[in-house]
Length: 359
Image (cartoon, helix red, strand yellow):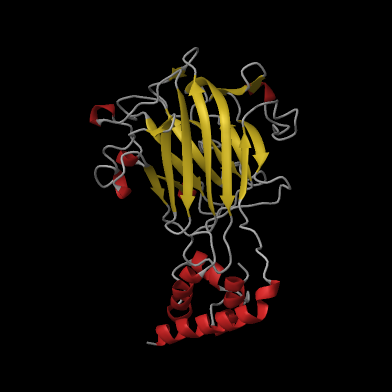
């Protein structure tokens, strides 16, 4: 009954303020950042992307005729990145409480392709932090480990020891001092193993695909899909926990986050990582055509308690729950603490109502 009375009180307060403020209400915008790179011109020359000064820019070649980028992956070579900030100002950062997705349309060429069956390394890309993400993604050397990463990873190696191939999305938290490997979240085992004999589609060479990675802050889960054209492929016939994995969908591979440790990313990068665990030879060599990149970021909105990107009546009930029972997690606490005092208390009601009516 207490929750019901509080819900009614918030609604009545909102209605009253609405009558007072209605002539002055202006839509503040949805705060969504989206950009598309389709390679109609050279992204480096146009200033959209950059290669860090200590990385080898010859690993990235722009084909003006075909309007595509070719990335030379060779895990024996030092790490090389092709980087673009998340927004034009270079100020946007994303963390555990923000929603986002990125898609990359690509083709792995058969010419020169090599995947050592005795090693294990990836073709990949994703979100990084230009200040805190180090060059060592494999964790073999350090100390410049690749913290603050959200990546798409395809491990084409196939062997009796490693199994494979393996496909998934990886999140590496910020450096907490507990060690690099303790910061890694990845769906090991059946969820990420590609099993053709069970019905999983293989990533074929010389074939165009789109890899889409979505992050849902409400459930703390990364979801990967591989599409051929507009058709999502079956890549998880026998996933973690049974057919289709946790969501029962054979076209998704999901990585659930089990840590509350922070992460902060501020750029998208095509990441040709060095395999520092194999200092003797190449684990993977591949020329990969990149035809299109799409990034959409929806930073956390204050008072959006049901994580749908809007602030409206659907947020009233979860706000009341957070107020009376305490926030369910740190992201709910961040969104419900409207007066920035570090707590969710009745002092946040006025700020919640204001946010509700400012839409």
